[in-house]
Length: 118
View: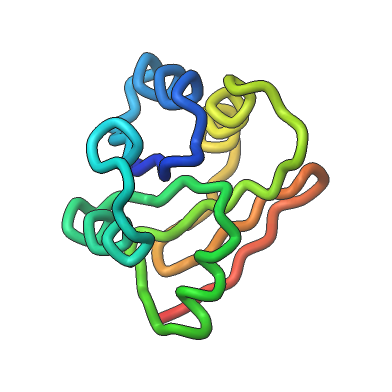
């Protein structure tokens, strides 16, 4: 599984995922300041799932027609420690058989919902 952490994704969670063997690139470390559309382009080129706290991705996908082929995981959390997203995602990836391709996956404090796009 190849991942792309958006600029707003905590660096400590990127490290946790990397240390657990995930192939993850951090936008903040590699391409700070690029546009969301450029994040999507890079994700498509590299076949990476986008990890983000940015709710604009729903609009980019469903209103503006962008299609991150490997999917987007949008964490809709208000309060968390910087390492929490990494730990949560490792547990999610190991415990649930969820498909992410062509899908916006929204993770809130109490549920996970998915919306497909083509």
